[in-house]
Image (tube, rainbow, N blue to C red; front, side):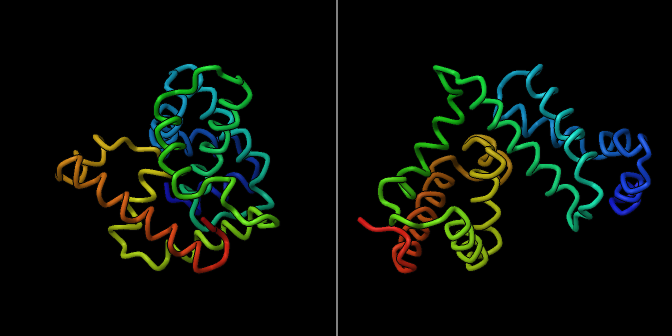
Length: 185
């Protein structure tokens, strides 16, 4: 079933919308939640919460990219779940991702008064300026949370090359944010 048909089921308030969404995208959502939460039970609950939120937001929203819409909800819910649990020891994946990006966008180095949406806009413009392969690699690492090893296996290149490409992209981002007046040293 295509995305438009599934979205129409949501608009018609048919419970089969959840079933069809799970058939088509359940594995994607489970993998994303599992990468972030590292717990099958929490990942399953996160996936179900994604379906619940989708049920409550479609309608009135009619997503143009249904998978991206679902993954955004799932990702946000997974991070909210970690925050809610107030885990003393965060998952190693989250610590690694956070430390990599904090070297590029540390809170203390953002100019005061910069709103989250301004940073989001700047990130969007920056990502659009990248070549497709570089942008996809960056998003797979920092949005989907794929490990260096997973990326290396997907692309068939050594982990050291992946790390180098990601480092160079983070440096380009830092330079761009400085140029835009959002970041200072």
